[in-house]
Image (cartoon, rainbow, N blue to C red; front, side):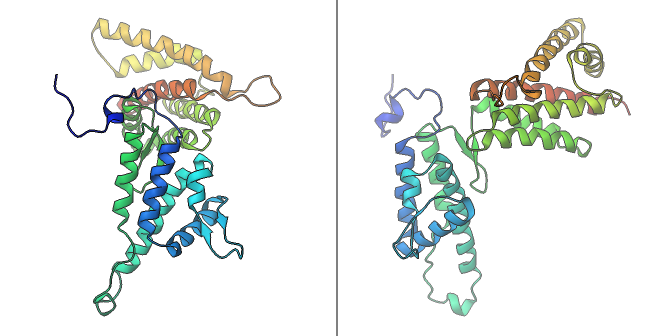
Length: 298
């Protein structure tokens, strides 16, 4: 068996386990790279002010209040401050770099670009997220999102693709709200589950406009028949569809616990694990309902 060549020990032999939400190593690596890119206290202070203004982060300041020290956010801030910093620093670099690039030819003659290319920051953060096994992913503009696993992301993307039809805009909005709530810090799991249910309910009402709400009876009678009719197959495939859609009724009953609240003084939200399970399975049902709606004859 060949041995990996030139790979760090921790990346080769240490058990990775479940993706993490926060570690000292993750913060430390970001802080060091941030300091390197800023290359001076002036840029650091400018970003610290931006972080306090745009995200409300508690950033250390000088005694006269004029200078900001954003390294404190990476070291001691809430994880939301660290994740916000990732995005806002990319935005600041992009803005400053674009200003420099649009300078007149005369002004640019012999000019030394002071701002590092934002392309230096994003791939570094991407790599740190992977190497430190953090449960996040970056979008094209360095926005941070919750990452569960590859299958979860694939299911989400596949469902968004189906919901791209203009007639499904309302369902797509609720579906995307579900993941936006999961991405919040801390994650609003109850709102995430509710939004996923709303996406399915909107689709059910589009299929059967006369219905008032999505419930077990609708799922196991009308929706089952409709989906089987719009997904023709042999006898075995139809039996499989029937069994899968029987489970839809159980899922609806389970989600109603968060849909209608509980008998308690304070609303009880699901922990992240069942919330992820409900969103993951919700993707499948929402995608199937959307596809069934689009397949139906007009």
